[in-house]
Image (cartoon, rainbow, N blue to C red):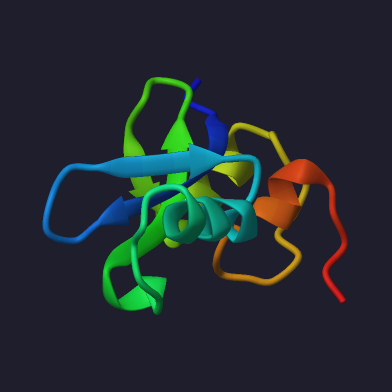
Length: 91
């Protein structure tokens, strides 16, 4: 069964996908390493990469993570956040 591998951002104007442990780290890398100017949400969609390498949005990722029993439940429904997968509690 398909599972979520890691957090990702996909640029709107290309097929370029940036991945990492969590969305905040990806944003920092996009700005600091790749020179993409903020705000990132105007340039890229946040989501996740599946173990098969497919980019999916947060809603689809939530469905995959719950159905595959990767997580028991969503902390902030209806979307999946990197904290859900990484076991981090948001404050």
